[in-house]
Image 1: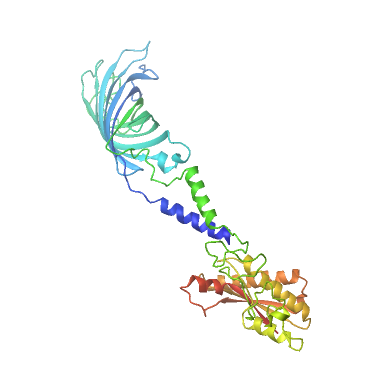
Image 2 (image 1 turned 120 degrees about the vertical axis):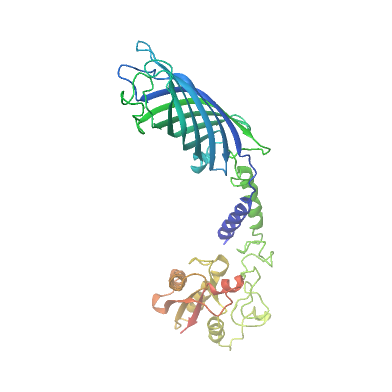
Amino acid sequence: MKKIILSTLMVGALAIGANAQDDFNKWSVEVNGGFNKPMAPITPGYFSPTLNLGHADLGVRYMFNEKFGTKLDFGFGGFSNASDTPDFSSNYYRLNLQGVANLGRIMDWQTFSQTFNLLGHFGGGIGRLTPQENQWADFQDNQYNIITGLTLQVKLSDRIALNGDISNIVAGRQDVAFDGASSINPATENGYYGANSVWWTGTVGLSFYLGSGDSHADWYLRENKYATKEELATQIGEIKDMLKDSDGDGVPDYLDKEPNTPAGARVDSQGTTMDSDGDGIPDHVDKCPFVPGPASLDGCAPDDTEEIDYLAKAINDGYVNVYFAFDSAKPLGYSASSAHYVSNFMKRNPGVQVELKGYADELGPDDYNMKLSERRAKSVYDLLIASGISESRLSYKGYGEDTSVDKSSADARQMARRVSFEIK
């Protein structure tokens, strides 16, 4: 019972703590510079360096939320020849509108790092290539392009992040080679390479976060979504205090209406000492707890009273039950003693046979509740067998839902989750 209540309270506390407002900065300005590498088209015999230093870009980014955004960026630079190859020099620029995905947040990197993050970007735009040398010098080759890339971020402060980006650009409608020494078709100025012109950039730069909030969307964590160890320890400590059972009767103090029950006393679900036969003597001191009798006889009836009639009536009238937690077939600690009373009664009356009747509340599907009620009856059957009662004197059956209780009442539903006994 304690474990069930502890789990429920912890889930509730964390769910309430996960509520927070969207209070983060959305704008950033990004400045990057580094290398480029033209791949194709290149005139045979012309080569570019593996890493050609000569690219820069400037961008403005807006995040709709912690995971998705958009950016407009302008990139420019120049291509040049590798050593020991024919000379060439070409300038270029591009202007792109891109969508941005905060892959680090999507993949929950924040669960193991608050310093590193990963962005993905994809989009399209326009550009121009202008060779400075060779046959097509000063030719302005206008084109469109598609760009995709990944940006690794390192958080330096709440306002600045270090970026390392690799991007691939595919150009369409390009007429001339990156070196300016040839075109796709020397006989025409509009041959077009199609979407086969490819080049790469690799840059390092900085993101400058704008806004009045304490954090940018790249790094924002919703308040209390990830509780600290100290916060969890405090919450668990408070819950454990609530679940203390000072008198050891199996009912937590915050539910116990009688928190000073004597040790060994039989109590109900609210921690109150039980007097099953109503004779004014609590069960734990009553030597005949199901037979009303005077205190002078320790709660037992005079010798001429038929004990079996009182016990049978108490059992058959439903005063003796074993109760269960929600969706459980394990008897609750405070009610397992009912099985021991029935066991003792059967040992003192060897001619008696008993049927165990399992029930469930009305929550859940009918077929599931039928099986659950049978498992409950079987668990009490096993207790009685273990106590020394012969299998031939016992039978059990699941009766499914007890529809006689108020389905809207938690207390009533608890009373429905039970195993009752019927003397045959």
